[in-house]
Length: 147
Image (cartoon, rainbow, N blue to C red; front, top):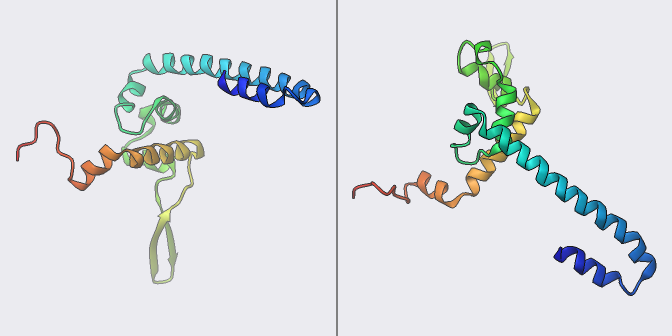
């Protein structure tokens, strides 16, 4: 409500602008209320799903990433090997082959676009975590470490 109060304070001396801003503030308030409702529903869905709860134990993976993973890999029986899941996500190397040249390139990104975005966001979140970063560098000891 601080935002709304500040906006109203800024436009109180301009009645024409205040008349335009008031409906926008009402819409903004309504959207924020509905986002809270949707977020609660999302959390309820994730809490009832064992796979989603397990995925959320991974650093950087929250409810949205876990649910996107669950929707993308809905039936595990479709995949004979775990490596096949990477291809569905577009995590396979692109190949360039011509004559005697056989070169592996960057990640192909041919796969489920939404899952790719979610994996990227999870990785960015994990990299921003100082604790995880220091642990990877070997500068952070676990509580039970000896030495």
